[in-house]
Length: 123
Image: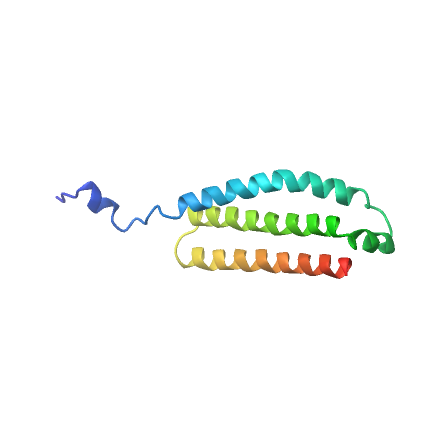
């Protein structure tokens, strides 16, 4: 028969130091997306269906390019953080580490491609 204290049972189960940071990062990015998504829809929606020259001329202005870039950055950061929390909850062991690295690489890679495309349009 083993007699373990509550502290001994909890040892090795991980710490609760980064949960609050994840929570607040998700809340801040959610509020930012709450503002950015309607701005993106209204700025991008006006040029849907236009030809390439009109779109490049439109994105040559700083406001639409900035709104698109901010929406892309905050959106992918929000995705990456949320996906990491899901992976930490449901995947364990080596697969967890590999999946988190894969999600981070995919997220930052797509963010870089999107920013490159916006910069190419704007310049």
